[in-house]
Image (cartoon, rainbow, N blue to C red):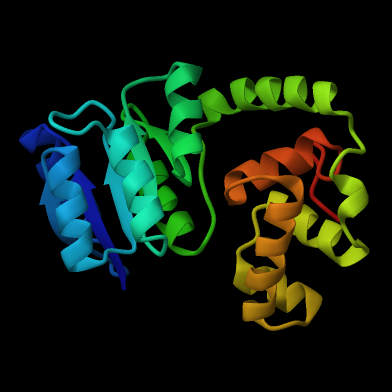
Length: 220
């Protein structure tokens, strides 16, 4: 069962989210918070698997709350659910440690898919925002040089990056490579350190911008 918390300062919107999620057989809404400070207190108590986080809240905003949750309770994954489609908000959320960014205008099935992906160790970015991410990371890659960072990776580590960028979970990667899921998790942590990224979303974008998983093509 995926334990989900809702963080939004609009009661009506939270009620709508609860009605959307509760019928799903694998999802349980365990709590609601109306500001960024309250959501931190409730995460400490309830230890949810996923938090659906609004950005514009009183007392403590969603970016700051995400940063603290990721720092103090790394097993809890944050998916931002926001009305803001500007890339500035997206990049701030990713830098704070969010594993997903979905627009409030998205269809219901995208929100549900984002919750499941986050709980499984993956991430979802709104399709409307993907070009903005790729543009920014290609710009960064052009400054750093394509080979920088890649030279530190072994053949197995490159394969891990490719499979991660293709959207596979740790369990799926483990099955593909015939290794333990815990081994995948440990090796990915080493890869993240080598290429200096904070999470799976950044690692996937790094792989794409460095030619390991071209957009529109499945990873080998």
